[in-house]
Image (cartoon, rainbow, N blue to C red; front, side, top):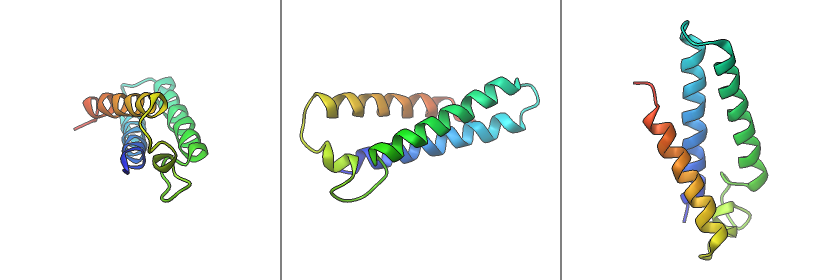
Amino acid sequence: MAFFRVTTSDCIRLLAAAYSFMETCPLVERQMSFDIQTWLLEFKIWASSTKAVKFGHDSLDWRLKEPGLSRMTVRKVLDDLRKRLHSREPH
């Protein structure tokens, strides 16, 4: 039942890693690094406001525990984001 918490935490970690990588790469334009930092901050705001990384009855996992369109949509978007970030993770 912790799919949203785990997936959101993983996406935050991957976005932070991408930002760190971009900051150290001299070939990358500064704008791209700024864009990733902006996405990371916006995603953290979303995660905080939806309580996606929280535990208990107030968490996103708890509030979306019942099957339905909202659960399926949020789950698909987060899963797609995580897969795309994993595929671009610096090695």
